Length: 271
Length: 263
Image (cartoon, rainbow over all chains, first blue to last red; front, side):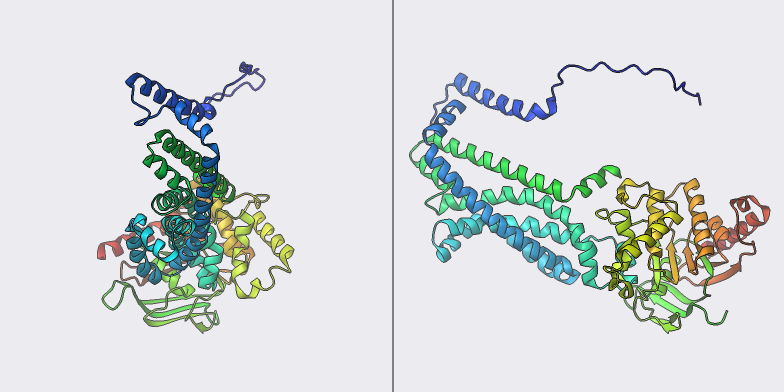
């Protein structure tokens, strides 16, 4: 091994005056690029705006119909978030219950899978019979569609405790409850928060499906009636609003996840 | 030796019902108070089963396991355990990880809240003993494998167990770290009033550390030989290069090879 002369001056790298962080700006540029492609594509092909409106036409529609769009967006956001919150509480509860013991896990899991396989749109008519059309079926559909991933993730987190950890604690006289509180629940939190990102996206699917089929308000309903009036730009305006709401809620969940379970992300990097 | 701390007599243990695998059969072992016992043997010889029987995680189908003068029918709670995998909880700091057993053991969990500082001081003292002074605030994933294993030892010792069970605790470490930790264990055993059972594949480790080396047969496991280690304490690492030491290691190696061939 050669020894380095420690007194040798190290040349300072030249610092550029302004550094553009391309990675941070990439989402913006790519989104703009998508809209530009869309605009150019529609203009060149000459598609009528009743088939595929240009983005400028869609933005025009957003400005033109801002009041109903805003009202319906808020309604959809409200039903989605409410259904999602119920799903969080119920999912966490059921997940903990299922993950508690191997027998419960084995017994309930197939039922849950079967339930999850039912397309939730098929449940909307039943919900309408029970609760009438409007907000309640939308909230419930959002709930039903989004609670499954939460349950599965929490239960999996509990069911996959390392046997060594369990042995160490059981040898000390730990009860099932101790192991759950000290290890199981903290351990399943990254799974839980991770599942929220999936769940919130699904919740939008649920509420919009229900609004489209059985409601007098919400973006789903607005788009359905715009479609029957051949107001295609308004349909696209609704889609755009849904995309925006979805991105915002997803980002919020990702942020919550990072805040709550930073240790889980850093630990995977350290190993 | 008046009454042994652990006394295993004619124990049979079968996994998975009456037709399952017989893990150990006719197992006999006595471990005296303060003794350091190493258990070696071919893989699958039921060494881990021995650990679980002694700690009360498994109850044998035949024979009896007596720990501290009482028949084992449930987890005994006077033991500390450490495995090859350090199993530190990543959401707790190293210090909080070490304090975990105190939140479980009946005797301590009532006092923990009111005597917190006393326990923290004790944990920090233990950290110092294993050479981790000042690392209590770090999260386990900020520590290297060897450091995690040191912390793991602290966790196994915090509630002052009478019996420390180590299941290949140094298996995943590099040779130099391993030797360092041998010395840590050696000093712990010398300075504290603790009985240690070390399950290992490493024969040099067993001879260097133990008072008695127990050789087990292939499945179904039973004890085929017990050797007292004649080397005087305190032992230094130089011992590893002495002919008498290597002779003993070689003898053990021969016995295990025979046991493997017999399987």
